[in-house]
Amino acid sequence: MNTPFGGVWIVFRRELATVRRTPGYAVLAVGLLVVLGGLVAVGGGGATGFVPAVVDLLLPTEVLVPLLAVVLGYRALFADAASGELAVIRTYPVSAAAYVSGVLLARTVALVALVGGPFALVGAYVWLTAAPDTGIFATHAGVDSPILFVRFVALVVPFGAAYLALSAAVSTIATSRRSAVALGVLALLVGVLGGDLVVLRSLSAGAAPGGIGGALALSPNGAFRGLVFEHVIGVAFAPEGGFVDTGRAVASLVGWTAVGVVAAVASVAFGPRVDVGVERLRERLRR
Amino acid sequence: MSEHAAATVDGVARAYGGVPVLDGVSLSVETGVTAVVGPNGSGKSTLLGVLAGAVEPTDGGVEYADSDSRTGSEKRVGYLPQRVPFRDGFTARETLGFYAALADGDPDAALADVGLGDAADKRVEDLSGGMRRLLGIAQATLGDPDVVVLDEPTSGLDPEMRERAFRAAASAGDDAAVVVSSHDLDLVDAHADAVVVLRRGRVAASGPRDRLLDDHGVDDVEGLYRAVAGGSGDRPTADDRGDADGEASEESVHVTGVSDR
Image 1 (cartoon, rainbow over the protein chains, first blue to last red):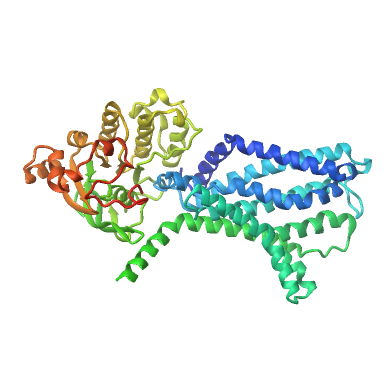
Image 2 (tube, each protein chain N blue to C red; image 1 turned 60 degrees about the vertical axis):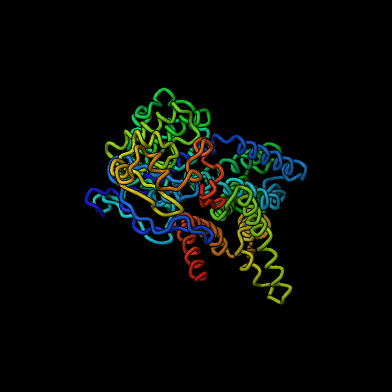
């Protein structure tokens, strides 16, 4: 291994093999498929077209995708630290950044497969069961199209990646499997509900409604929802757009992912020093 | 730092939750086997963790002889923690293959060196405790590090496996400074070139085994242990040998949740 990228690749392959050999993740994907398929079938969107299906799936997606991402992420970095294997890995010439990158890249690939697979199958179901004009590739507003569903799935990936990176980062401060689960659930709740609650609170405090678009884009869920309205649902029904600032929403999803990755790298690289700093402070206070 | 030292520990201290576990520990390790012995809670695992870079000291530090000559892409220290940490679901060859890829080593040769060539395709969870430790020793020696740190590699093993694990550790000491903690004083007696006796987080005695035995007028390491580490209350018990997480002896300093780190 001669380059930092070599370390990323080696860690990536091991992590992907770990995910592949964990049957529970495949069960989760099947569960996601059942839920999504059931919602589309029961909601009637599947029989109507891709955009109605997206409307049916949007709210469940905002909960289920973060949930699956947190399940994938909450032990991603914690497992090696808890077992002591991270201490062994750190004796090898692989940096904290390369290690975290390898782990998170592999988990992101797993996320794409575990989330993308069920959504693709649901899309195929809609294609087969919906009205005849869903085969049209939309270039004009008001026309349903599989392209719009592909866009929706493409937006799901960075949305899930943000939660994956954040839950992995949070897991690095866990001291037990139970606390890792608790921190993961906390990250999920804060992410799914926190942004909307903050927006509602600011509105009730007298903030201008015109600023909702900008404020909404700050949370992962708000950014994802805004992008779906702007580039999937709104394409067919509201050509003028204006649901969310696209640049700000994309920057939000990328930013949350980056925050998760940087926090995870910092925690793996400098966590032990923080512990020592606390001990030194405790020693000084005792004197 | 002495001329032949592969690593020098200088004034290392470490506390957990305000309780000192190591206090002003200084010593050098040279090529060959250095055994670290002492009662439960005396700081052996923490000292070995500091040597391996897995534990950050609150004071002092470790200097390695090759810190200038080795490049950042080479493995400097090999480390096997007290609890063998490998992931389930991977075979012995796959496990070592991961580490070998990081250190440009040969997993099959490393497995053969510790006598696990025939178990290469067994999954880690299917290996016996002894075989897992041998796998851990193989991992620690991958990449030919100058310092190999093995924390209680014989803990919980039957006599034959203890001997095998210690022999594997000792053979690594032909080319590297192998630092091994153990309660198996007979094996330490048979294989160690140097001994460090820890007591209550401090070095009670350290140096070449033969010199220490002469200095203290004893015949073997167990005699040295009795003379230096304290009375019978500090001697390793059968429980210590079979269970590294066993209760501390009356005189030892045992901090719950800390001594195993």
